[in-house]
Structure formats: structure tokens, C-alpha cells
Image 1 (spheres, rainbow, N blue to C red):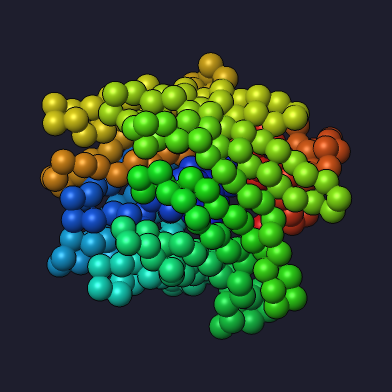
Image 2 (image 1 turned 30 degrees about the vertical axis):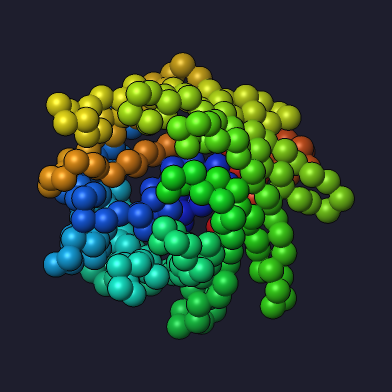
Length: 303
């Protein structure tokens, strides 16, 4: 279930996949049936299946996370879903559930507000279920978007709760080319008396889809490249991802019609690569405590 939470922040603070933030932009033209991702070992990683309301908006996305190794014998070992609520045609909340003993349990909620003239939210707040009181939702993250590039957040600030108020954690600003695509984003993370700066630069194909991401921090540089394929109508069919030249995953897309399809990717953490805290101190093993850490040049939240 952590995968979905991380993908919520993927677009915002470069944690990896950006599926959740794009989900709020689906409309009747974006009608994927399912999305299937295979890992770097050729094993099935996850399967998303979509259900729709009568007006074409997404009602539910079911995610089965698989492990096709011999030990798990191809069984689903994690099942979750996202349930969407609308006000008119705007997605105003998304509830996240995981399945345990055939029961669905709520573990977080995202609320969207302050919509601009294009119907895009200016504020996203994520709430997490209180471990001590499952009936209570506690504020966990607030994202304030001040500029979009098309439908993707370009400039935004990321806040964390602090005794009833919100503390600024990081600020991201973007360079945008004449096609309206983000070419570079610079993220400044604020710590106690320190600032941590990371940048991500993007290259695109003729369809406007990413072919290369170069992520730089003071500790490392990571280069991800993507081989995109399209059908005769220009719809995305598959994305093959390489991380620093090594094959990482392949994602396939299936849709019901229209002239667009959903974009979703997945990245898998490599716990063999070194971990750092935001002060630059390296861990000998993967950290087990809660917090935000750096691995492979990216920020990772341990929940």
C-alpha cells in the first residue's frame, strides 16, 4: 500500500512514479482498461484495473501487486484500491484502501481544492489514518501548486504539519520550453540551518513523452531513459525504462477507446545502493526509522 502513497508524491518531490497526481486529470477520453508492469527480472510487478462512472469519470482503480517468484508461486501479495469522489466534473477527494482478510481498510485520503480556470487544483492535502485511532484522519502532506505546464505541476511548495500549522519543507521551480513542456525542475529542501538542492532535467519525443530524465544531487547523478512505442493512432502502447543504462521495467497500456491513454510508470527500490539522511550522513544498511532519506539520488519517505 505504500506504493500508492509514494506515487501521490512522485510528480511533486521526485519520489518516482507520478500516477496519482495524473489520476485527477483523467476524463472521458482517457479510458484505460488496465495497465501491466513487468520488473527488471521479467516478473509481473503490478496490474491496475479501472472501473468507470456513467459519465466516463474513473470510479475505482484496483491495484494487484504480484510476485511471480517461485517462492510466492505467482500470487498477489498486496491488493489496494483508489476510490474517487467528484463535485460536478472535478475530482475533489481520493480515498486509498488496502485489502486485509477480504476486508477493505481505509489508510489515507487526498483532498483537492482551489481549482484554477482549467480545473486543476491549487492545493492537495493528504491525510493518513491515525495508527492509535483508525477512525481519525490526520493531515500528513500539503502541496500548493502555483504554476502548471499543461496539466503537470511546474512550480509548487511542499508542506508538512507541525503542531496545528504547516511548515514549508521544499520548494520546486521549473523551466518550461516553447512547447509548454518542463525541461528542468529545481527542488530546494529546507532543513535546520541547511538547504538541499536537487535538479531534474527532461527530454521528450515528438509525442511530448519523456525519453530521458537526469536527476542530480550533491551526492550522485541518476539517468533514466525511456523507449516509448505507440499504436497507429498515436496512443502510448509501452514504455521500457532503463536506469543508468540497466533495464528496469516495462509497462504496457490497454484502453477502451478515445485518442489518449493513461501514462503510468513504476520504479523499484534497490536497497543495495547507499542511503543518506538529508544532512549527507551515509547509512550502512537501509534505514528502518520513519523519515525522509536519499537513495540513488532520490528522496524516499519511510512510513
